[in-house]
Length: 240
Image (cartoon, rainbow, N blue to C red; front, side, top):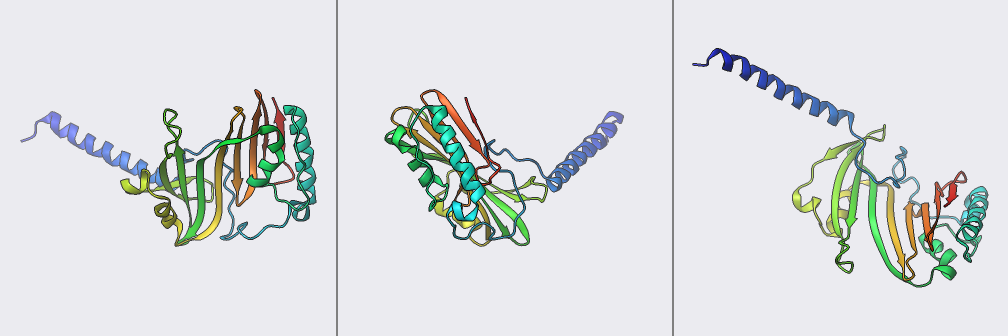
């Protein structure tokens, strides 16, 4: 037989449990912002396959963007007091050519490390994202980075809902296992962030989306030149 106190407590506990569960379900439906890096491009709804085709040189694809890029490349050289090469009319502003532009002043590359990747794809009528964080141990710089994988449904608002992964897939899986997560879908976009370290201590933090640079931060002798939205003519850059 339950006493009066138990008769009160048990329904209250059940009610609070159901309320918490209902709140969890509502939050999942509404989505959450996700714990993504600050330098990740904002989500823009796009059709599957958009932006994934071959490229024209920047000067042909967008003369305005080509002009803005070379204006800011010149400003970078002045900011960091180093020799830079302008972007060729035949080139895209991508990882390879960013390296060429600053190569005369930066010297030898010590290491190129992937910081994170994100693949948005369409499957079963919804947009999904595979996000991978690559973490390195500062005490073992030569060791392979540890991969942490997160899988989401991406809502039209840009918020996300979690897709549960088993332990083996979530924690340091192989690259081939990561690829399988989105292999059955239709690609929308692929984004990656790289850290380039030079022997003299200089660095480049580089983010690209669909093969085109989205943001670049160049550090040289204690000064920084930052550019974002470099995939459009409305890019913004600063020197400090």
